[in-house]
Image (tube, rainbow, N blue to C red; front, side, top):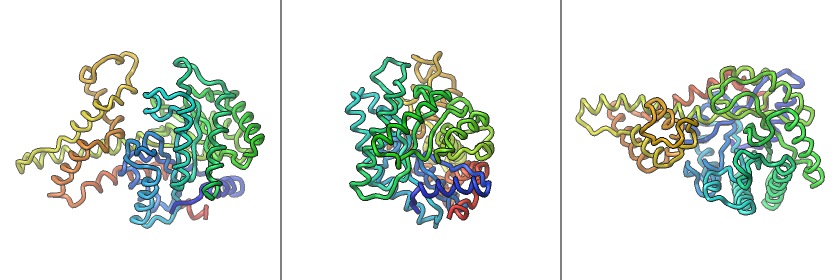
Length: 409
């Protein structure tokens, strides 16, 4: 069931303070229908609340790369909840809502006023769809020279401007309170070290209060806790220090880039309130489909059928999208995709697969794969969903989420 997040967070804080309950909420990036389905199924079976952190690249007014608008995303989430009999709370959330954080807006080099206007329209669409949390993240400024970060007061002012817009729209639409998340663990945000982190929170508190928005104080603050795209070790010392800083304000710390983290059990032990996982589930889906294509190859050989060539379709679509270039190492920049090593090509296809799951050629090849395998297996799609479920349960167990919905009720 779609639920209000603020009360859940308040109850979680109360459980920690009064009953020493250690739990970290899992935020799943819904980068495909299979991942969304698996996450809802796990939420139902584990009886745990689940957050769904959708970026503007994934879900937006134009459909994003998943094909979902905020409204159709929430409707699909509800459909899966009904299918799996999920009675634990489900929270649709916006991840990285800020100017130029949608790839298309950067590619089109939108000026600031237009980039902010586009984000505000998306915030309204998220509210109308029933989102529970909005991550306000104006920490990128494409008007500055590459590598230069926006001044901290600028980040604060744009954060307050976007929260004020969301609150005005929420009242206009007569909607219940929505939770906010602020900050980023990206280096370009300037919020990595403790001094910047503290200054940001102090200035944000002052400006929200001056705009009569003190009641919109963020539920989550995102911070650098050691992990990034290429680093998988969570830093408990940094997490404890930052948790101590935000706890007095009734705020929880949230980590991004939790994919493949080496020490996930340290998250609840250090007081982390939430953690985002996304690319890992794409990789699991990719690997599961690759395994199915190996089975299909044998079946097609035996039965003289033309194979789907799904993995080739995925790689071709990733190359055509040019998204793979954002993950290149410095020594690879300027090289053609075909010139890269097989290991790197596979990694880039696996990582970029989330951008092309809905590409017509990939959809057609996947459909053919399932049709072939259904000759000997009743539901090949279920095998893919089950693989993602296993990855999800790893975090459910590590974050102490099993049956958490009972304690939160």
